[in-house]
Each structure stands twice: as structure tokens, then as C-alpha cells.
Image (tube, rainbow, N blue to C red; front, side, top):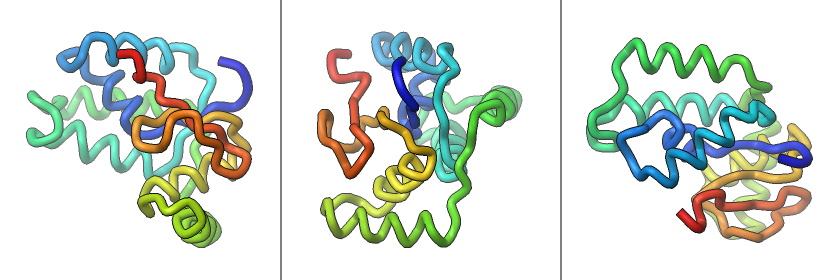
Length: 140
């Protein structure tokens, strides 16, 4: 990876799920192994909620697996969602007509001064202010 990178929740979910789509798992595992990215407190919360839910992940991760992943995620720079992030997210949501939760991740990426946000949820190739969005699973 070149430059500062921020990860959306879906990258971590695929990395934690070897039982899912093999191509997405392999790509996500590669991204996480490079250990050159940041996340937000929102991303960690969404990750925990999704990997524990049988509706989102079948089978869900065990408590020990969730604990392992959360401790691993604490090794990376983490942007806390605060008042300024929320206000910035509201501006981004309105400007780009995107989902509020996606705009909040984008606002955290901006605070980190990320050049690239890896996400499946935002438009691949679009630049939102100073952050360029790439879908790392586009070919998977």
C-alpha cells in the first residue's frame, strides 16, 4: 500500500471470515497482514456486531475469536468518533448524498489524513474531498 490507508468494516469482516467468499477473504487477509492502515471506533463496533450475528456471518465467530480480533485491531491507529467527526459526517452526507454511517467513516478517514479508503460501500474510484475510495474486492 502506498500512502495513508483507512479501512471500512467490510474489509475486516472478510478478513475474519475464512468461511466466506475465498477471493474476498484472501484479499482482505492480505490488506490486514500489511498492517499499514487505520480504523475508527465505529468500524470496531460494526465489526463486533456483524461477526457475532448469525444473520450476518454463518457461523458467527466465537467469543474467543472476537476477543482475538478486537485485541488485534487495537494495534492499529484508531480514530474516535466525536462531535467533530459527527458534524463533518453530516456535511459529507449532504454534499455527496451518501449514507450517514458511510459519511462518518469517511470523516474519520479525513481526520486520519488517509489518502485511500478501502470500502465496498462507497463508489469505487470516487474522491470525496481529499480521500480516494477504492473497492479492494472489485475483481473478487
